[in-house]
Length: 238
Ligand SMILES: [Zn+2]
Image 1: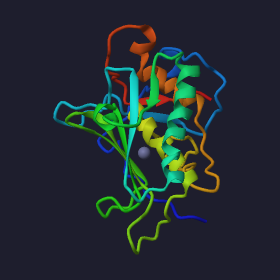
Image 2 (image 1 turned 135 degrees about the vertical axis):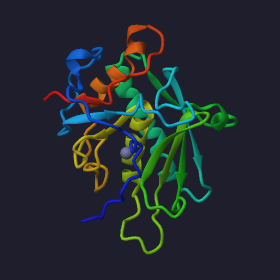
Image 3 (image 1 turned 30 degrees about the horizontal axis):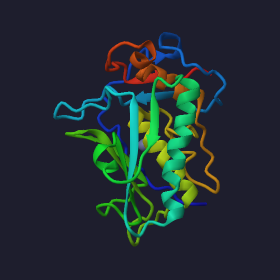
Image 4 (image 1 turned 180 degrees about the horizontal axis):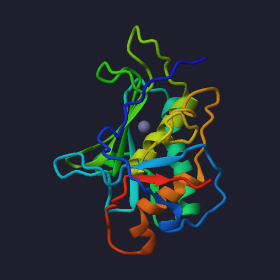
């Protein structure tokens, strides 16, 4: 069995749990209802989390361009996993949020400078820290996603396969869209850790994921102005 890389979480500062978390019954309705059900009990909502410097995990633009900054040693096979992950999310967003939120893969000159989300793909350990991926906000916005396919020498954890790189990109783009982790982190939901690894990985991009995104992006669905979510957790409905 493959050892799992402890993914650096984007959610470290979530504070007190809600007694009554937001649920699908309270949120804007997605335009799909036939996504598979995962074993996630609830999803953390990153979109309202304060990252300091007046920076939050949320966006005021619902048309998001995604670019890749790849190390020269990244192979074409690994590199192709990122646009595939973007296309997977885009198909789900189109189906389930009616195009109110969109992801678009961009490449070429100026793409990194102008993209809303930049995925850095590294075939080496990042800063000596063993993680599969991380999504962070910075002073200039929430554009920073990093995926490391190789762990440090001597690490007990395994490197990522191309299929696991694809799954990791789905997971980190989920963070970039505003979702945190499944409250039961061992979940096979794409926002848990249970489905990120394997051959093939056994993740579920679930109805709860899109229900929670409908909450995060309710202003885009409603056609109103950008509003930051306030609930730190979204309850999944079986
Ligand atoms: Zn994560």
